Length: 307
Image (cartoon, rainbow, N blue to C red; front, top):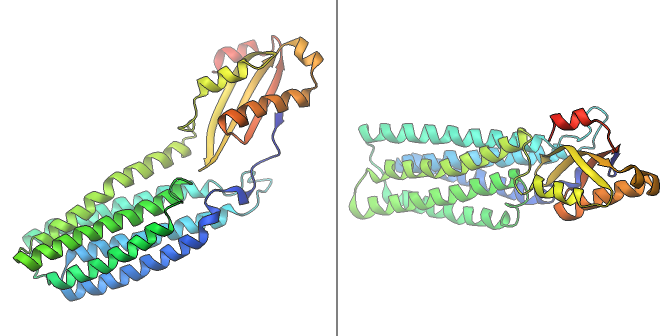
């Protein structure tokens, strides 16, 4: 059996290089939350309070991401050979569940507001939301390069983006109240904020569960990978082929590869393993692969049970 140089180091996690930006994003989210809570109390706006709750969720979610990234930097141990990399994915799931909770609360509160209207100061509502939007734009700028790197960072970016869109909804609601006096614009804006949370919550939860269920990475075609391995000189069959993701940007693969007896006699095992792992790494960007070489005719029964 062969493998590469061991589990990828903790320093190789794609999220690790963005810790400083996450700290800045947390600071911005906390500040926005405080400003919006004060603005909601002074203006009577439910939309501002909903946006404040959303901002608080941003801060909590990004803090979870930061904590997961910090844990992921810890070195692997004999009991945890991949370290704490998977914590990042659990953090992303918890992040999605927090967003779902905010959606339910916002929707319930907005429906109540229709039956129990409150006088809202549209001008103050508009001004506070404008400040929130400006701060969210700064947060989006900080995370602009991070969203494609990991589920955690994607979750953080989507939360800030959703909060920015929520601020836009509050701004529109404030303008409507300011110009027309239509108080129902406040709960309507709240519902819009809630609805904006749904797609990204679903997307984040779906992708996180995909990793937790150890499904094949979404950008990997196992059939094509099998064809590449079978095209290597001396390879007769490939079975027990499995690929999954430990954490964002860290795919791993295992395979049993049947090699002709002539190839095993003529080629040094280490060179043969290196050639096969290079095929996997170079063509499919899998840095960690575990390959078991088998002689011709070996484990025929096993091959009939596994893909």
